[in-house]
Image (cartoon, rainbow, N blue to C red):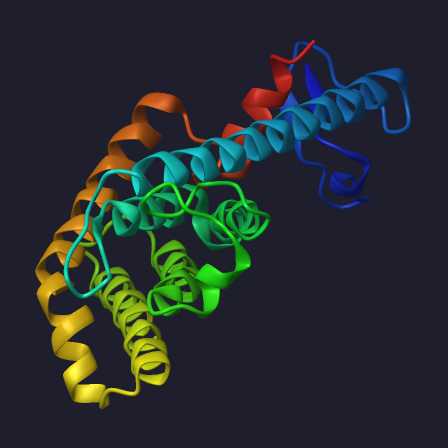
Amino acid sequence: MYCFASRRDVSPTDVRHVRTGRRAVRGGPEEELCVKRKSAFDVRERTRKLVYVALFAALTAVLSQISIPLPSGVPLTLQTFAVAFAGFFLGWKYGLAAIGVYVALGVCGAPVFAGFTGGAYKLIGVTGGFIWGFFPLVALVGTGGADLRRPSSAMLALAGLAVCHMIGIGQYALVTGNPLGASALVVSVPYIAKDVLSVLLAAIAARAVSRRAASPFAATDNAALLRKIKHIS
């Protein structure tokens, strides 16, 4: 038996279907049932994705508090790991959403930034450039994916990290009046090894969690999608 995935899959020359025991008639009740099943599946998947966005915003807030203050004013934190993890697991679009929620909470005064701080002033302070840099970081690692064995993924991850550091260096130099080179030696160079390791560990964690948690962000082929639809009642 066959069931159409949706009306848009039906054409006079090519009908996509899944096995259900009886051929559905175009426009008949079986096809309508299939459309409803796919709609229910889509709603469930969208809800799961929004829940993951909220979870990763919360995870970034928690990991930001694991910090070691340094004389430079830029603390040693797990923020880079959290941001990269969000990008690798959620992809660039939902990763940006998660980091956007995190930053918005901080701007509104919630103590989610490093050291249990918050407020819009953090975005224009000596460390604010790195907060702005989270956006290109999560976008680029999310675009490349978590398989860093692929050269394109590794290059995009490193590019995201480099852009984040450049924005951080530029704002630090602007706020303090120090030269760019001297600023880089203070707020970037001492953190590069830690941040590269953080991105690598985030990619490993994202791949492991995706396999175990059946991530809704993983790419699925049409056959796998139709198999899921068939089991929704």
